[in-house]
Length: 409
Image (cartoon, rainbow, N blue to C red; front, side):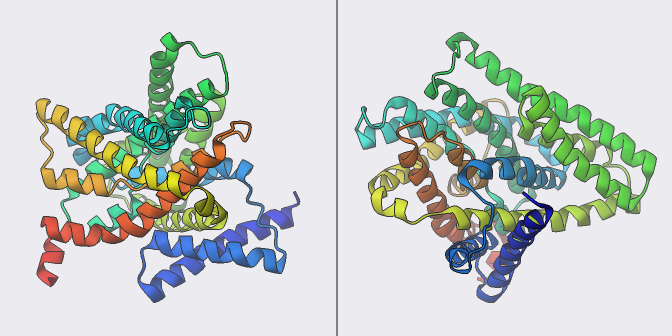
């Protein structure tokens, strides 16, 4: 692929993102939904004009994981206040590890029972579906919470859960996919593999974040600070995922948190400039991500797999209710009670997006049930964006979580 082709594809993705931002401005839709519609529109347009976007099912996972997710995850973790994260760390980890396992297995059991076709859709296929859909992407919900001036502790808890459960869901998916593909994975080593991958990524990220903070304090420059932090986001993911074979997502999370923690007492202008850099980078990559989702969605799957989609939607919602309820119960036992209004918001705000799409597009086509899983995941992602995301505002108002909404109602 030549340089001019790469540049053309980069400009095309930026154009989709800008179109989504313009559509949001004109229609006042959520950013995620506006960008998804823009991507779907360009997906219809590009065959007409004969332009090759370069986006394929086999390369979208690498594009999302190695280019888009490091920026989005680092940006989300960078804006979390270390003191608040420390206060809500135990509940976030309960939601992210036991909660992910509960969500995965409950979703799998309900989907397996609902489809009721062991030959065409075996238990391992249901487990893959559950693992893919265990990861949440609450970007749209968090934006609403901030706009509505909801408690910052709730926003921190939702973002913290999402950051950690993305990592655990990806590791879980890799283990289940190894079984589905016939790889030699010993059952007694599953827990050890999961722990080593998850916490290995955390250690790698913590070291990268510490080195980044030291380098920032040595350079003391606005431009250099932004450069170091952007390099850390991409570098920590690449080092962990590609070289050390541990969780890249977990590495980025810890790199951002540790760097932010080490620099929290600094008030120099070069640190304030870093926040501006992450604001526009987060906006751009978030818009590109959902535009890409709209670009790759094919509506043929909804015609052929509508029943499976109708089965997976209530299955995932029920699994989310159980995961949040059980994890909240244990959190209360450990001294951190989660209000029922917060639990309801977390259940309904557990949207699925980037990671679910990236994981399902990485399924080998040699698996006979890959098309069914892909259809269910795409259908659920659309449901969360069209229904859950758009109704979060009224839900927040009804639960009385927003002083701003209460004043305007």
